[in-house]
Amino acid sequence: MPPGSVDRVFFHLSRPHGSVHAGTPVARFADAADAVAAIARGRRDGTPVAVVGAIAFDEAAPDALMAVETLEHREPDAGSAPAHAVPVTLTATIPAPEVHVARVAAVIDQITAGAADKVVLARAVELFAAEPLDIDAVVAALAAGNHEHNAFRVDLSAAGGDFAGRTLVGASPESLVHKTGDRVTCRPYAGSAPRSSDPAIDAARAAALLDSAKDRHEHRIVVDYLTSTLGPLCTTLSVPEEPVLLSTGEMWHLATPIEGVLREPEMTSLDLALRLHPTPAICGTPTAAARDLILATEEPRDFYAGAIGWCDTAGDGEWMVSIRCAEITADRRTIRAWSGGGVVAQSDPDAELAETTAKFGTVLRALGAADLLARTD
Ligand SMILES: C=C(O[C@H]1C=CC=C(C(=O)O)[C@@H]1O)C(=O)O
Image (cartoon, rainbow, N blue to C red; front, side, top):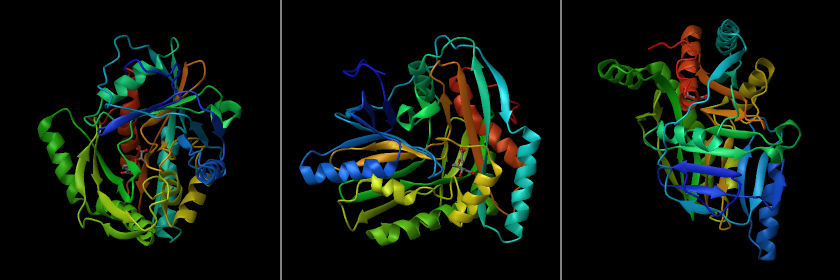
Protein backbone atom coordinates (compact mmCIF):
# COMPACT_ATOMS: atom_id res chain seq x y z
CA MET A 1 0.00 0.00 0.00
CA PRO A 2 1.62 3.33 -1.00
CA PRO A 3 2.11 5.93 1.72
CA GLY A 4 -1.10 7.98 1.84
CA SER A 5 -2.33 11.19 3.33
CA VAL A 6 -4.40 9.33 5.94
CA ASP A 7 -2.65 8.49 9.20
CA ARG A 8 -4.70 5.46 10.20
CA VAL A 9 -6.53 3.19 7.78
CA PHE A 10 -10.21 2.68 8.58
CA PHE A 11 -11.20 1.30 5.19
CA HIS A 12 -9.32 -0.07 2.21
CA LEU A 13 -10.65 -2.05 -0.75
CA SER A 14 -8.48 -3.15 -3.65
CA ARG A 15 -10.21 -4.25 -6.85
CA PRO A 16 -8.91 -4.79 -10.39
CA HIS A 17 -10.38 -1.41 -11.44
CA GLY A 18 -8.73 0.52 -8.58
CA SER A 19 -8.57 0.77 -4.83
CA VAL A 20 -10.48 2.98 -2.41
CA HIS A 21 -8.97 4.12 0.84
CA ALA A 22 -10.36 6.08 3.82
CA GLY A 23 -8.97 7.42 7.08
CA THR A 24 -10.50 8.69 10.32
CA PRO A 25 -14.32 8.81 10.20
CA VAL A 26 -16.37 11.88 11.07
CA ALA A 27 -19.37 9.78 12.18
CA ARG A 28 -20.01 6.11 12.98
CA PHE A 29 -23.19 4.10 12.43
CA ALA A 30 -23.88 0.76 14.11
CA ASP A 31 -27.17 0.60 12.19
CA ALA A 32 -27.12 0.85 8.39
CA ALA A 33 -30.46 2.71 8.52
CA ASP A 34 -28.69 5.59 10.29
CA ALA A 35 -26.08 5.77 7.52
CA VAL A 36 -28.85 5.86 4.90
CA ALA A 37 -30.57 8.66 6.87
CA ALA A 38 -27.29 10.62 7.13
CA ILE A 39 -26.81 10.37 3.35
CA ALA A 40 -30.40 11.57 2.76
CA ARG A 41 -29.95 14.45 5.22
CA GLY A 42 -26.65 15.45 3.58
CA ARG A 43 -28.32 15.54 0.16
CA ARG A 44 -31.15 17.75 1.47
CA ASP A 45 -28.72 20.13 3.21
CA GLY A 46 -26.26 20.31 0.30
CA THR A 47 -23.52 18.66 2.39
CA PRO A 48 -23.22 15.24 0.72
CA VAL A 49 -21.86 12.40 2.83
CA ALA A 50 -19.57 9.50 1.80
CA VAL A 51 -19.93 6.22 3.71
CA VAL A 52 -17.59 3.21 3.99
CA GLY A 53 -17.58 0.10 6.13
CA ALA A 54 -19.20 -3.24 6.77
CA ILE A 55 -22.77 -4.54 6.94
CA ALA A 56 -23.32 -7.57 9.20
CA PHE A 57 -24.84 -10.83 7.91
CA ASP A 58 -27.68 -10.69 10.43
CA GLU A 59 -29.83 -7.57 10.24
CA ALA A 60 -30.30 -7.75 14.03
CA ALA A 61 -26.51 -7.55 14.58
CA PRO A 62 -24.60 -4.24 14.62
CA ASP A 63 -23.13 -2.84 11.40
CA ALA A 64 -19.83 -0.96 11.21
CA LEU A 65 -20.42 1.96 8.85
CA MET A 66 -18.57 5.28 8.90
CA ALA A 67 -19.05 8.69 7.30
CA VAL A 68 -15.72 9.94 5.95
CA GLU A 69 -14.61 13.30 4.61
CA THR A 70 -12.53 11.92 1.78
CA LEU A 71 -12.29 8.74 -0.22
CA GLU A 72 -8.94 8.33 -1.93
CA HIS A 73 -8.99 6.50 -5.25
CA ARG A 74 -5.73 4.74 -6.09
CA GLU A 75 -4.31 2.03 -8.32
CA PRO A 76 -5.16 -1.59 -7.39
CA ASP A 77 -2.81 -2.95 -4.72
CA ALA A 78 0.25 -4.63 -6.22
CA GLY A 79 0.37 -6.92 -3.20
CA SER A 80 3.35 -8.80 -1.85
CA ALA A 81 3.92 -12.03 0.02
CA PRO A 82 4.70 -11.38 3.70
CA ALA A 83 8.44 -10.91 4.15
CA HIS A 84 8.20 -12.17 7.70
CA ALA A 85 5.13 -14.35 8.33
CA VAL A 86 4.24 -14.41 12.04
CA PRO A 87 3.76 -18.05 13.19
CA VAL A 88 0.08 -18.82 13.83
CA THR A 89 -1.46 -21.79 15.59
CA LEU A 90 -4.94 -23.23 15.24
CA THR A 91 -6.74 -22.81 18.58
CA ALA A 92 -10.31 -23.81 17.70
CA THR A 93 -12.52 -25.07 14.91
CA ILE A 94 -16.07 -23.80 15.38
CA PRO A 95 -17.80 -26.21 15.31
CA ALA A 96 -15.67 -29.40 15.22
CA PRO A 97 -15.43 -30.65 11.61
CA GLU A 98 -17.68 -33.66 12.29
CA VAL A 99 -20.33 -31.34 13.72
CA HIS A 100 -20.26 -29.26 10.53
CA VAL A 101 -20.74 -32.46 8.51
CA ALA A 102 -23.70 -33.43 10.73
CA ARG A 103 -25.20 -29.93 10.35
CA VAL A 104 -24.95 -30.15 6.57
CA ALA A 105 -26.63 -33.59 6.64
CA ALA A 106 -29.44 -32.21 8.83
CA VAL A 107 -29.95 -29.24 6.49
CA ILE A 108 -30.07 -31.58 3.47
CA ASP A 109 -32.88 -33.44 5.29
CA GLN A 110 -34.70 -30.13 5.89
CA ILE A 111 -34.31 -29.18 2.22
CA THR A 112 -35.58 -32.58 1.12
CA ALA A 113 -38.56 -32.10 3.44
CA GLY A 114 -39.31 -28.79 1.68
CA ALA A 115 -38.15 -26.28 4.32
CA ALA A 116 -35.92 -24.44 1.79
CA ASP A 117 -34.31 -24.90 -1.63
CA LYS A 118 -30.78 -23.84 -0.67
CA VAL A 119 -29.04 -22.96 2.60
CA VAL A 120 -25.44 -21.73 2.89
CA LEU A 121 -23.79 -23.27 5.94
CA ALA A 122 -20.52 -21.89 7.29
CA ARG A 123 -17.94 -22.73 9.92
CA ALA A 124 -15.09 -20.83 11.54
CA VAL A 125 -11.53 -21.42 12.70
CA GLU A 126 -9.72 -19.46 15.36
CA LEU A 127 -5.99 -18.85 15.16
CA PHE A 128 -3.48 -17.30 17.51
CA ALA A 129 -0.46 -15.33 16.29
CA ALA A 130 2.88 -15.59 18.10
CA GLU A 131 3.20 -11.80 17.93
CA PRO A 132 0.89 -8.96 16.82
CA LEU A 133 0.14 -9.18 13.11
CA ASP A 134 1.11 -6.42 10.72
CA ILE A 135 -2.31 -5.86 9.13
CA ASP A 136 -0.86 -3.96 6.14
CA ALA A 137 1.33 -7.00 5.43
CA VAL A 138 -1.66 -9.36 5.70
CA VAL A 139 -3.67 -7.19 3.28
CA ALA A 140 -0.70 -7.05 0.87
CA ALA A 141 -0.45 -10.85 0.98
CA LEU A 142 -4.21 -11.18 0.37
CA ALA A 143 -3.89 -8.92 -2.70
CA ALA A 144 -0.91 -10.94 -3.97
CA GLY A 145 -2.84 -14.20 -3.62
CA ASN A 146 -5.35 -13.62 -6.45
CA HIS A 147 -4.96 -12.36 -10.01
CA GLU A 148 -7.56 -9.58 -9.53
CA HIS A 149 -5.62 -8.16 -6.56
CA ASN A 150 -8.78 -8.23 -4.46
CA ALA A 151 -8.16 -7.39 -0.80
CA PHE A 152 -9.81 -5.36 1.93
CA ARG A 153 -9.57 -4.19 5.51
CA VAL A 154 -12.32 -2.52 7.50
CA ASP A 155 -12.11 -1.14 11.04
CA LEU A 156 -15.09 -2.61 12.91
CA SER A 157 -15.06 -0.20 15.90
CA ALA A 158 -18.23 1.52 14.67
CA ALA A 159 -20.16 -1.63 15.65
CA GLY A 160 -19.32 -0.89 19.31
CA GLY A 161 -18.90 -3.35 22.19
CA ASP A 162 -16.40 -6.17 21.56
CA PHE A 163 -15.77 -4.90 18.02
CA ALA A 164 -13.77 -1.88 19.27
CA GLY A 165 -10.37 -2.01 17.59
CA ARG A 166 -11.16 -5.12 15.56
CA THR A 167 -10.39 -5.30 11.84
CA LEU A 168 -12.06 -7.37 9.16
CA VAL A 169 -9.60 -8.45 6.44
CA GLY A 170 -10.24 -10.54 3.38
CA ALA A 171 -10.05 -11.06 -0.36
CA SER A 172 -13.56 -11.52 -1.71
CA PRO A 173 -13.95 -12.07 -5.44
CA GLU A 174 -17.72 -11.46 -5.28
CA SER A 175 -19.10 -8.01 -6.12
CA LEU A 176 -22.55 -7.64 -4.56
CA VAL A 177 -23.16 -4.41 -6.44
CA HIS A 178 -21.16 -1.73 -8.25
CA LYS A 179 -22.95 1.49 -9.14
CA THR A 180 -21.72 4.34 -11.34
CA GLY A 181 -24.36 6.93 -12.32
CA ASP A 182 -27.31 4.98 -13.68
CA ARG A 183 -25.22 1.82 -14.38
CA VAL A 184 -25.30 -1.09 -12.01
CA THR A 185 -23.37 -4.37 -12.14
CA CYS A 186 -23.35 -7.48 -9.94
CA ARG A 187 -21.02 -10.45 -10.19
CA PRO A 188 -22.56 -13.29 -8.19
CA TYR A 189 -20.48 -16.37 -7.43
CA ALA A 190 -21.85 -19.79 -6.44
CA GLY A 191 -20.66 -23.28 -7.28
CA SER A 192 -17.12 -24.22 -6.31
CA ALA A 193 -14.23 -26.60 -6.86
CA PRO A 194 -10.81 -26.44 -5.21
CA ARG A 195 -7.80 -25.53 -7.39
CA SER A 196 -4.95 -28.01 -7.77
CA SER A 197 -1.23 -27.32 -8.17
CA ASP A 198 -1.25 -29.96 -10.95
CA PRO A 199 -2.35 -28.11 -14.14
CA ALA A 200 -4.09 -31.15 -15.63
CA ILE A 201 -6.08 -31.84 -12.44
CA ASP A 202 -6.82 -28.12 -12.10
CA ALA A 203 -8.24 -27.94 -15.64
CA ALA A 204 -10.25 -31.15 -15.12
CA ARG A 205 -11.79 -29.77 -11.92
CA ALA A 206 -12.76 -26.54 -13.71
CA ALA A 207 -14.37 -28.48 -16.57
CA ALA A 208 -16.24 -30.75 -14.14
CA LEU A 209 -17.54 -27.71 -12.25
CA LEU A 210 -18.90 -26.12 -15.42
CA ASP A 211 -20.65 -29.43 -16.18
CA SER A 212 -22.00 -30.08 -12.70
CA ALA A 213 -25.81 -30.03 -12.58
CA LYS A 214 -25.70 -29.62 -8.78
CA ASP A 215 -23.41 -26.56 -8.95
CA ARG A 216 -25.35 -25.01 -11.84
CA HIS A 217 -28.54 -25.37 -9.79
CA GLU A 218 -26.85 -23.77 -6.76
CA HIS A 219 -25.62 -20.94 -9.01
CA ARG A 220 -28.93 -20.41 -10.83
CA ILE A 221 -30.69 -19.81 -7.51
CA VAL A 222 -28.42 -16.78 -6.91
CA VAL A 223 -28.84 -15.44 -10.45
CA ASP A 224 -32.64 -15.79 -10.26
CA TYR A 225 -32.69 -13.95 -6.92
CA LEU A 226 -30.63 -11.05 -8.30
CA THR A 227 -32.72 -10.91 -11.48
CA SER A 228 -35.98 -10.71 -9.55
CA THR A 229 -34.65 -8.23 -6.95
CA LEU A 230 -32.83 -5.95 -9.38
CA GLY A 231 -35.31 -6.27 -12.28
CA PRO A 232 -37.96 -3.88 -10.88
CA LEU A 233 -35.22 -1.31 -10.09
CA CYS A 234 -33.89 -1.26 -13.66
CA THR A 235 -35.11 -0.17 -17.10
CA THR A 236 -32.87 -2.80 -18.70
CA LEU A 237 -31.12 -5.77 -17.16
CA SER A 238 -28.74 -8.08 -18.98
CA VAL A 239 -28.37 -11.54 -17.44
CA PRO A 240 -26.35 -14.12 -19.41
CA GLU A 241 -27.99 -17.53 -19.72
CA GLU A 242 -24.77 -19.40 -18.97
CA PRO A 243 -22.34 -18.91 -16.08
CA VAL A 244 -18.61 -18.45 -16.69
CA LEU A 245 -15.69 -20.06 -14.83
CA LEU A 246 -13.64 -17.67 -12.69
CA SER A 247 -10.83 -18.45 -10.28
CA THR A 248 -9.24 -17.21 -7.11
CA GLY A 249 -5.87 -18.49 -5.87
CA GLU A 250 -7.65 -21.39 -4.15
CA MET A 251 -10.96 -22.00 -5.90
CA TRP A 252 -12.78 -22.33 -9.21
CA HIS A 253 -16.24 -20.78 -9.21
CA LEU A 254 -19.25 -20.34 -11.44
CA ALA A 255 -19.98 -16.62 -11.87
CA THR A 256 -22.44 -14.52 -13.87
CA PRO A 257 -21.79 -10.87 -14.80
CA ILE A 258 -25.10 -8.97 -14.56
CA GLU A 259 -25.53 -5.39 -15.86
CA GLY A 260 -28.45 -3.02 -15.61
CA VAL A 261 -29.58 0.59 -16.03
CA LEU A 262 -31.26 2.03 -12.94
CA ARG A 263 -34.77 3.44 -13.09
CA GLU A 264 -33.87 5.84 -10.26
CA PRO A 265 -30.18 6.78 -10.63
CA GLU A 266 -30.36 8.67 -7.34
CA MET A 267 -30.45 5.32 -5.50
CA THR A 268 -27.07 4.99 -3.81
CA SER A 269 -24.71 2.03 -3.86
CA LEU A 270 -25.54 1.58 -0.15
CA ASP A 271 -29.29 1.53 -0.90
CA LEU A 272 -28.66 -1.13 -3.52
CA ALA A 273 -26.41 -3.23 -1.27
CA LEU A 274 -29.07 -3.20 1.46
CA ARG A 275 -31.77 -4.18 -1.06
CA LEU A 276 -29.73 -7.11 -2.38
CA HIS A 277 -28.22 -8.45 0.87
CA PRO A 278 -28.43 -11.31 1.84
CA THR A 279 -28.23 -13.09 -1.51
CA PRO A 280 -28.46 -16.88 -1.80
CA ALA A 281 -24.66 -16.93 -2.33
CA ILE A 282 -24.27 -16.57 1.44
CA CYS A 283 -27.79 -17.16 2.84
CA GLY A 284 -30.10 -19.29 0.72
CA THR A 285 -33.59 -19.39 -0.68
CA PRO A 286 -36.29 -18.61 0.28
CA THR A 287 -34.32 -15.93 2.13
CA ALA A 288 -36.25 -15.90 5.42
CA ALA A 289 -36.38 -19.69 5.76
CA ALA A 290 -32.66 -20.03 4.98
CA ARG A 291 -31.71 -17.21 7.35
CA ASP A 292 -33.77 -18.77 10.17
CA LEU A 293 -32.10 -22.15 9.63
CA ILE A 294 -28.64 -20.53 9.62
CA LEU A 295 -29.30 -18.50 12.77
CA ALA A 296 -30.70 -21.59 14.54
CA THR A 297 -27.77 -23.78 13.46
CA GLU A 298 -24.55 -21.73 13.44
CA GLU A 299 -22.50 -19.66 15.86
CA PRO A 300 -22.71 -15.88 15.12
CA ARG A 301 -21.27 -14.92 11.75
CA ASP A 302 -20.44 -11.34 12.79
CA PHE A 303 -19.25 -9.61 9.60
CA TYR A 304 -18.67 -12.78 7.56
CA ALA A 305 -21.33 -13.10 4.81
CA GLY A 306 -22.33 -9.46 5.11
CA ALA A 307 -21.00 -6.80 2.76
CA ILE A 308 -18.12 -4.34 2.83
CA GLY A 309 -17.76 -1.33 0.59
CA TRP A 310 -18.06 2.35 -0.12
CA CYS A 311 -20.57 4.92 -1.26
CA ASP A 312 -19.21 8.31 -2.41
CA THR A 313 -20.89 11.71 -2.16
CA ALA A 314 -22.53 11.13 -5.59
CA GLY A 315 -23.97 7.79 -4.38
CA ASP A 316 -21.60 5.76 -6.56
CA GLY A 317 -19.64 2.89 -5.07
CA GLU A 318 -19.07 -0.82 -4.75
CA TRP A 319 -19.97 -3.41 -2.09
CA MET A 320 -18.33 -6.83 -1.93
CA VAL A 321 -19.89 -9.90 -0.35
CA SER A 322 -17.71 -10.39 2.75
CA ILE A 323 -16.37 -13.89 2.18
CA ARG A 324 -12.79 -15.29 2.31
CA CYS A 325 -12.32 -13.08 5.35
CA ALA A 326 -11.31 -12.99 9.00
CA GLU A 327 -11.71 -10.72 12.02
CA ILE A 328 -8.53 -9.73 13.84
CA THR A 329 -8.82 -8.61 17.48
CA ALA A 330 -7.57 -5.23 18.72
CA ASP A 331 -4.34 -6.80 20.06
CA ARG A 332 -3.75 -8.27 16.55
CA ARG A 333 -3.13 -11.75 17.99
CA THR A 334 -6.45 -13.61 17.63
CA ILE A 335 -7.90 -14.27 14.18
CA ARG A 336 -11.30 -15.77 13.42
CA ALA A 337 -11.86 -16.83 9.80
CA TRP A 338 -15.09 -18.16 8.30
CA SER A 339 -15.99 -20.09 5.20
CA GLY A 340 -19.17 -21.63 3.94
CA GLY A 341 -20.81 -23.35 1.03
CA GLY A 342 -24.22 -23.61 -0.56
CA VAL A 343 -26.16 -26.72 0.42
CA VAL A 344 -28.86 -28.10 -1.89
CA ALA A 345 -30.68 -31.44 -1.89
CA GLN A 346 -27.90 -33.06 -3.98
CA SER A 347 -25.03 -31.88 -1.72
CA ASP A 348 -22.62 -34.31 -0.06
CA PRO A 349 -21.75 -33.41 3.59
CA ASP A 350 -18.09 -34.56 3.36
CA ALA A 351 -17.57 -32.62 0.13
CA GLU A 352 -19.06 -29.53 1.82
CA LEU A 353 -16.53 -29.83 4.65
CA ALA A 354 -13.68 -30.16 2.12
CA GLU A 355 -14.98 -27.10 0.25
CA THR A 356 -14.90 -24.96 3.38
CA THR A 357 -11.36 -26.19 4.13
CA ALA A 358 -10.22 -25.19 0.65
CA LYS A 359 -11.85 -21.74 0.98
CA PHE A 360 -10.02 -21.10 4.26
CA GLY A 361 -6.88 -21.27 2.12
CA THR A 362 -7.32 -17.62 1.05
CA VAL A 363 -6.84 -16.27 4.57
CA LEU A 364 -4.43 -18.98 5.70
CA ARG A 365 -2.09 -18.43 2.76
CA ALA A 366 -2.00 -14.69 3.49
CA LEU A 367 -1.00 -15.53 7.05
CA GLY A 368 1.81 -17.76 5.74
CA ALA A 369 -0.05 -20.81 7.13
CA ALA A 370 -1.49 -22.40 3.98
CA ASP A 371 -1.04 -25.94 5.28
CA LEU A 372 -2.54 -25.46 8.73
CA LEU A 373 -5.75 -27.36 7.85
CA ALA A 374 -5.88 -30.73 6.11
CA ARG A 375 -5.87 -30.21 2.36
CA THR A 376 -7.73 -32.20 -0.28
CA ASP A 377 -5.15 -31.58 -3.04
C1 LIG B 1 -20.10 -18.63 1.10
C2 LIG B 1 -18.92 -18.63 0.49
O1 LIG B 1 -18.78 -18.66 -0.86
C3 LIG B 1 -19.87 -18.35 -1.72
C4 LIG B 1 -19.30 -17.79 -2.96
C5 LIG B 1 -18.86 -18.60 -3.98
C6 LIG B 1 -19.20 -19.96 -3.97
C7 LIG B 1 -20.02 -20.47 -3.02
C8 LIG B 1 -20.42 -21.90 -3.05
O2 LIG B 1 -20.06 -22.60 -4.00
O3 LIG B 1 -21.07 -22.36 -2.12
C9 LIG B 1 -20.66 -19.60 -2.00
O4 LIG B 1 -21.93 -19.27 -2.49
C10 LIG B 1 -17.66 -18.58 1.24
O5 LIG B 1 -16.59 -18.48 0.62
O6 LIG B 1 -17.69 -18.60 2.49
